[in-house]
Length: 161
Image (tube, rainbow, N blue to C red; front, side):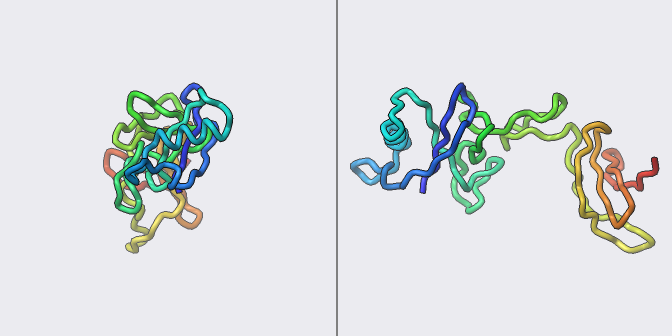
């Protein structure tokens, strides 16, 4: 099945499924325009904007090993960028940074590369990773203890208010 995003001013307002057969040209090759023409006819809106999107594409990678298509699967509320030819979500906070390779916004401090810490000589896994926008930091929990990520030492430190 093929998926198409309906755009209004480059904002995704809905995503619909179209049978792959609709996309086939006379040589049996899928053509996005054939899907667009079908949807315009079906909805009776000859000027409506549609872009094909890949259900298996996320952050510029195809999860089944295929070719990634438009960086991300489109969803309602996302944006289509015609210059980059990709879909991405809205910028959640002013200080977040756009990653071109993934077509997504990320916090200004890179996500921790470790999710473990040592407590009383035993390595434990932290399981509640969260970005704290107000404090501009990554936080995590183990049992009832809070940890904050130190991006300089690349370690988790016990948080003591």
